Amino acid sequence: MENAWEKHWQRFSSLSETGTVYGKLATKWKLQLIDKVANSILQNHFQVLDIGCGSGDSLEVFRRNGFIKLYGIDASPSAVKRCKRKGFSNIFLEDARKTSFPNGKFQVVFEEGLWEHYRNYEPFVKEACRLSSDYLVALQPNHFSLLGATTKIGWELVSKQKGGVREYSIPLNYFKQLILASGFKLTRELFTPFHGYSCMIFRR
Image (tube, rainbow, N blue to C red; front, side):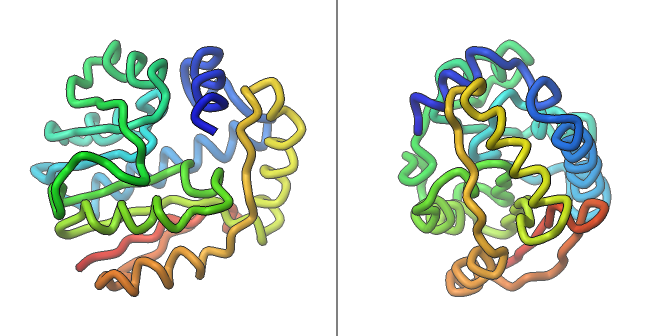
C-alpha cells in the first residue's frame, strides 16, 4: 500500500485534483468541516498531529485558524516533500501503525482519509489513540450512506489512475468501539451534507 500512496502523491499535488465530480464536492465539504472543528471546538494553542497528512490540505486549514504547533506524518516521501514545500517543517516519514513518538505526545491527533484504505485498520486506530493526550478527531467516509457509496464507486473507478489506492467499506461503529475501548469518550459527531462523511470528536 505504501508504494500505491507514493504513486498517488507523485501524480497529484492536492485532494482537489483527485476524484470524480462527487468526490471533489465531498472534499470541499470535508475541508469546511475541518474548518469548523478547528475554529469552534479545538483551541489553536494545541499541538496537532495529522496522521496521513498527504498534501497538507488539512494542515492548511488548521494553519488558517491560527494553529502553529502542527505536525504531520505520511508513508509517502512525495507527500512529505509537498507538505514541507508548503511551509510545514514538522513533517515526518513514518508508518502510522507504529510511530517513533512517545505516548501522549500530542494534544490532538487528527485523521482524515487514511483508515478506510486498509483492510486491517486496527493498528492505525490504536496507534492514534496511543499518541493522543486529549483529543482524537477522525473524519471518515460513511459508505453506507447514498453519497458515501457513490463517492466510493467513483474512487474505485479511477483508482488505477491514482496508483491503485483502494477504499474499504468499514462501519463507523467499528472505529468508535476501538477508540472508546482505549479510554476516550465520543463528545461530538458532525456530518457533511447527506451524511457522506462523519467527523467524530473524542476526548480522554
